[in-house]
Image 1 (cartoon, rainbow, N blue to C red):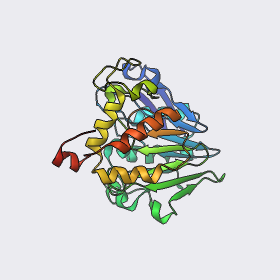
Image 2: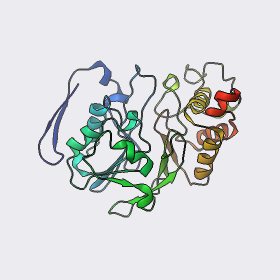
Image 3: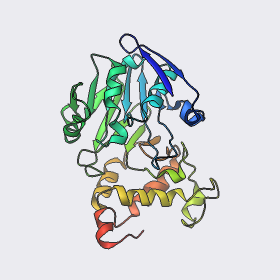
Length: 292
């Protein structure tokens, strides 16, 4: 259990009480996945869907992407502080769609960040629903901000609209400095195969998806990725359109909201090719039945 006391403008005293759920490295520690980019998510074996939150820190400013559910709040905030980041320096809360697993802790974040310059940044189609979590903080629409956000240093985040993947207001975020793509639901998968960084390699291209992975001893991650997209994405066209919007980006790391981080060029190519080949996704799967 996280114990915290709020003082002034984002200054917090925090301690970690004995809790078996926070004893593992993946739960107790932040992980810097690129320069100034931290995984601050929380692994919960009970929920069946791993949620990843990410913090970008740049000098005296920070941005939190998909901050997590209400239940994740304590673990996410602890990792932010352990990364040496004063929560009061967070100037934007970016929500790539409006589901509760990524924005349920918005009210708690607002209280502890306590920064008069804080803004919620999302697509206008999402902001309508984000008001049901909290109306305290001003909400900005990415399409009214030039589909970008720029830190005081000049570091630039670009937003790419991926409608109906899986909601009308869905988008992904690209950090131009580190070439990290925060891909929201795209490239995600279910918890049964979760590791922080993917272990997909050459052998995965010829592996029988029904087999246990020879690397992890878990079910095939590619099969899980396919199953996830077939259930979460709305249609063949929606998934294909989203992939077209990002396929020409110069990407170093793909950081999805669910599933494992794709941190190798090979794993990115394998997963990208798999998703491009998928048919009968979402409503098309429901009507016509699934096939690879």
